[in-house]
Image 1: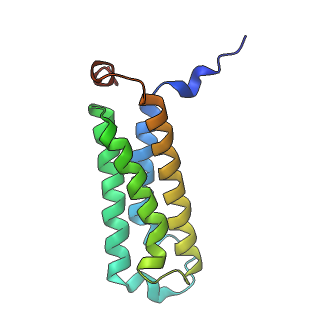
Image 2: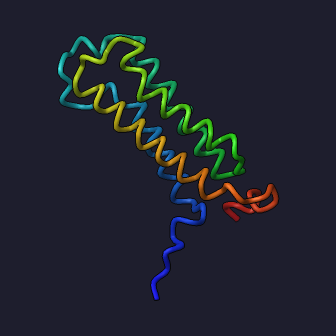
Length: 132
């Protein structure tokens, strides 16, 4: 009989995946195959990507060390902001950067939802045991 409980437990590889997503978000304005080179020069877009990436990276590091539910909710909210930011910051016409941020934001939201689902029934003592 196979074990279908693989995704039922919060594992450390998920925290490492969050850190990787954060690093990818930070460097996303400089990914190759950008439509217009002028987009890279927009400091507000770069600042947004770096700030969101550092937040995702930092929250994932905190989850690795000391797990709490607010971290998962914050991850979901930051991911939703990354999906919406091309429309609020005015670079929705920039094909690849919008695609990068929408895809990475969706991955962050999905990871946050998975982590929140896994930890929904845990009490505080069980959450503190994560990573040990």
